[in-house]
Image (tube, rainbow, N blue to C red; front, side, top):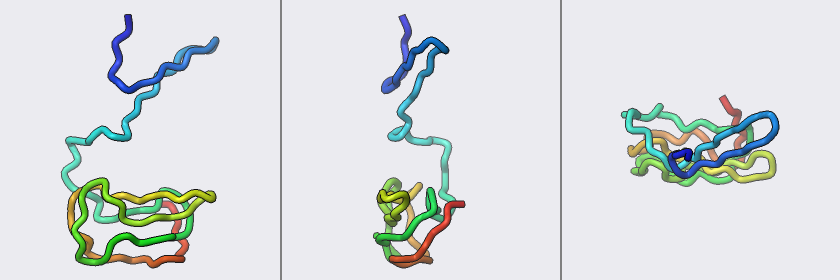
Length: 97
């Protein structure tokens, strides 16, 4: 009997086994502060900026939407805080770092 933390997925084939864990909703208890920046996850175009300077945001709250590879991607705050500056506008090209 194999006990694994849920949710997980086992893939078995002739070459071996692979276990995948869904960590999308797990919290990181060691993270104390954010990086002070929200960076694009891939190259794209800013579709919408959802916050303004001075706005309070909660961890996981949407900050901006970019379009990349014909899909929209929501960029989220990594921690609770206040927006100091918004350095982009709708239509700007962004580059993943």
